[in-house]
Image (cartoon, rainbow, N blue to C red):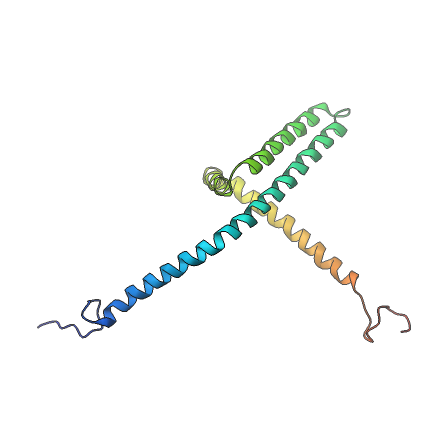
Length: 159
């Protein structure tokens, strides 16, 4: 039996055979253009987020230092432990400020591979904290603009 190419295969026997290649090239070109347009903005957002994160981490370090000072008279050993943790947290804030976003992501991926249990525990802690923040924000939102069914701003009063 002989095999014949009816144009539905992968051969270059006609213009239809080149369409997938042309589409792939156009898609790649569009992807590069979008990446080139979005990359600077994404980098700017990442840098601002990194800076805000570093400030927040530094705030935690300052809180640990203050807590250590408060606890020191009653429990010097605990104070030293908390102070040491605060210093490590402060070094983390410095690293966040100094390193590029790509370097930080690489470091996080490397840490996740070497310490998966700690990474999962940290992710769970962060998720729990974020859920509490979201719940607190949702619970506080209705209290700001309570209004009655008649369109007034009072509850239970005449309006």
